Amino acid sequence: MLACALPKQGWTHEAHLSTCLWLIIERPDVFPERDLPGLIRRFNESVGGQNTDTAGYHETITQLYIRGVRAFLAMCEGDDLLALVNGLLKSPMAPRDWPLRFYSRERLFSVEARRGWIEPEIAASLL
Image 1 (tube, helix red, strand yellow):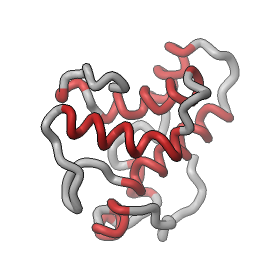
Image 2 (cartoon, helix red, strand yellow):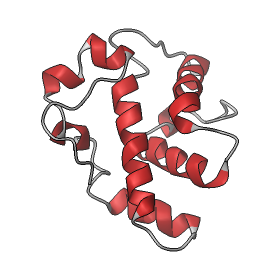
Image 3 (cartoon, helix red, strand yellow):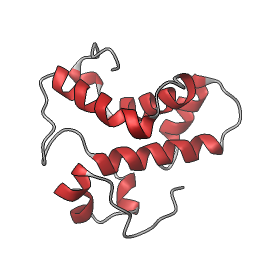
């Protein structure tokens, strides 16, 4: 993903989560809250995608999952990357609809939420 060499079909929801976890653990030079938006946008464009008000990069979802991955890691012991990724992908935050625990569908998929971070309206606690 970082090298924009991943096939478009490989950039799945699970790949997003795994990449976020890997960046936090293995890349201290990358600050996900700041850097991941640009990395995702660049990747999307490298595979022919667009980052618009209706497609591509989504700021609120990205920032919510970064917070979720950080909260997940704070609860974990050990540093085996494979075990951490597998644990994350089996956790309550792994399903694609996890953000809907915090946002209504209308609010989450609004242009405002896609363009910038918006606070949760349903629940504030992550895990």
